[in-house]
Image (cartoon, rainbow, N blue to C red; front, side, top):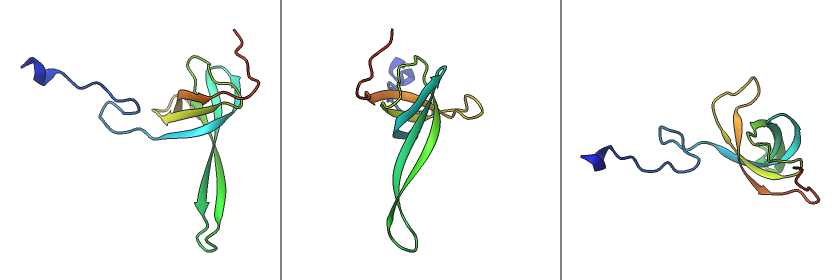
Length: 105
């Protein structure tokens, strides 16, 4: 009986319903706001008519609870519920630090 009620541990990047959350990797362009970072995500898309590869970029506002990301860092963000008018993403991890960026504490 007890084994039936026990749930498997939640995998990272999954919602409570078990669905996988959308995640993207980008570069932090601004970390000047409190607990908010701006992440630029680049992607490549093929032009419908000319079949050329076009680079597209989009900015996402993401929640950084512990203010660990700095400008220039490469980060992974994932979709979440709306946190404010612009924020619908949250910081998952800092993949690599920007060159010459020291921690200020």
